[in-house]
Image (cartoon, rainbow, N blue to C red; front, side, top):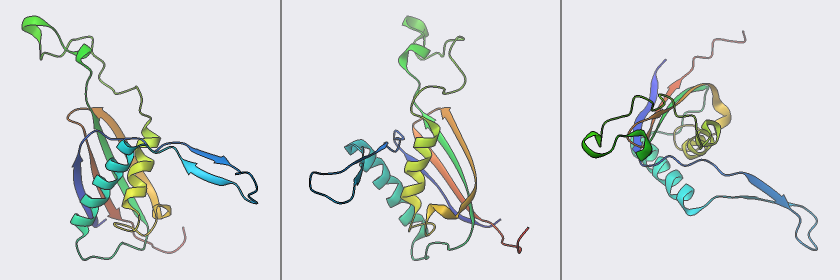
Length: 152
């Protein structure tokens, strides 16, 4: 599989918010709004900018793609010792990041940011691998072309 894009965006990954629908008084159709705060807007912009920088003049890929995402999240201070052990990870600290934000909401924010930059639409993603770990806050994005060998 040929790599289309491979890059890292530094910063605290932000989850895509939930969507809410309501029908304004006198309207015929409901309005869907996303509960996206400023932090999410800045995160999506940072991912989109890095993707655009990496893609340069290349058009977005129009075929099937696989995406690998590795989110790195900051460890809380409680995972480290105090006093002379400050900066030393406690033995009791968890290995895996199993607290919010949810991995699927983090993924949605990145996928939407890659649309129209790396690929035309996130519906083209036919395979993905997503990890959420502790480390310097960032996301590592790898997008690869998937071969289309007829219908199998």
